[in-house]
Image (cartoon, rainbow, N blue to C red; front, side, top):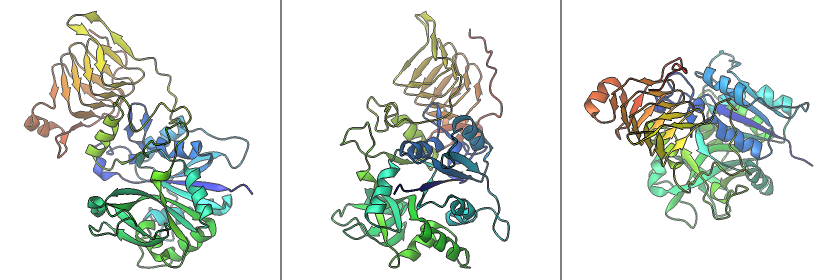
Amino acid sequence: MRLRVLGLVLAGGKGTRLYPLTKERAKPAVPFGGKYRIVDFVLSNFINSGIYSVYVLTQFKSQSLLQHLSEGWRFGSMLKNQFIIPVPAQMRSPSETWYQGTADAIFQNVNLIEQSDPHVVAIFGADHIYRMNIASMIEFHEHKRAQITVAAIPVPKQLASEFGVIETGLDGRIIGFHEKKPDAPTIPGDPGRVYASMGNYVFSTRTLLRELHDDANTADSTHDFGRDILPSLVGRAEMFAYDFQTNRIPGEPVDAAAYWRDVGTIDAYYEANMDLKAVSPELNLYNREWPLRTASYADPPAKFAFDDENRRGHAIDSIISAGCILSGGMVRNTVLFRNVKVHSGALVDDSLILDNCDIGRRSKIRRAILDKNVRIPEDTQIGYDPEHDRRLYHITESGLVVVKGNRTPVDLATVFV
């Protein structure tokens, strides 16, 4: 019997710690890696794993996300079990409220599960950077005859206070949950690490529906999987932890480490993007057997203009996306997203420059993130004078300067001089 799998993607979070990048967009819609959006990772994981029935549940500031899904994920066929469909918040609760937690988000869309009638439901978040063969997790779920399987990643025990920690027996059976406790139990046989929950779950459909209805009728519940439903199932359901480190991606070396990054803060987001510049990055975007899918834009190729001694457009240890023009400017250790213009004499170091930015002549940018559609005037310096930057821009604790984006793109007919 071929297993029917329904994917539900939770893509409605505010992403407040990523402000100001989330000022006008939901976290899953935040650009990443030059041409992608964060949501592209979970959707690519589903499609590459052979799971083609996926609902994307949205909520806060969803316009940018909905537009991206429309442009990049028009997926479907004549078959009813092949679709990727965004689902705006329907306010189906009796009090007609926004989603009150992850479990409530699923409960308010329980009709989608009932209509699809799957054997199992894969509930995944849309706010992490990772690759995962979800089919392997489902095989593990079936092999264990589990009712619930929770994806878990080993992390050093010193980080236990930053995660929801899963306590397991030797066979991987879940026997407890510990929310951000420094003394949380370590992995059996591995005293230096704990299992951190990745917030990705596989449920047998019957179990999921029963627990959602019970939770909805529990007055003092926060209606969250991690806080309410999963802890309540300990000891009364077959529940196992799936070790993410055992996950293998086609096209990758057998000994390749599983990649997962929580980009919940500006600094973490910056570091994850900068990881991509490595000669052999841990996250391989060039694996054709496991492609990272996204919208297909009609962008022209990147262009490097001029070859004069003091006016040469070039980039070193950087990612340069389609549509970029480096006109006599220098870019180092940087990710340029789509359609960025760097004018003569400009210098960009250790930065993320998002779509449609325009960096004027002789300007200098260092350790900064420029949101979409930012125009930097000539002779501007960012990242060199913290006190000056603090008066104009957002600065993180580590000193990263974040320049807020504009609602409209820069003039694409800019003449380079």
